[in-house]
Length: 168
Image 1 (cartoon, rainbow, N blue to C red):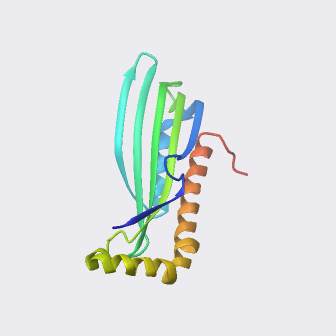
Image 2: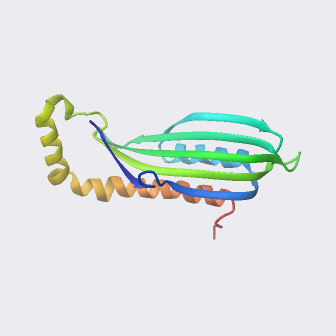
Image 3: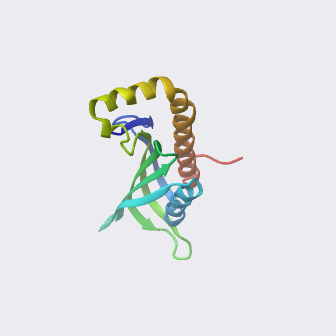
């Protein structure tokens, strides 16, 4: 059975970003997709719900990105977006006002093809030995570091898009 290890946003506590104000929703959405593509992730929009309410539109969007590094490891990035009470500010521009909340998690999945499973109980022992003595350094210096960099790159991309950080 594959093993998932949370690198950024461990367990139930994901990295959270909140913003209230004006933003370009279309650019925000496109930039997330472009980041996945530019960094070699296959991504899927698992949920896209739009509700029209008297206070404005509410959007719920969930992305899941995966990047196969080799036959043993892949990186997973999950993004959940809630755009609440959005209303258009300008007919000429794609500017909206409202509240946006984002949750992000970066995970590495090892043995995602379940190569050791076919050997039963001895496979579990072999996988444990493989993790402790053969691949341990690569797990933490390569795989975990890559997930950390990619996920924090997405976080910086989102924050910059919302004007929460500026680029010098």
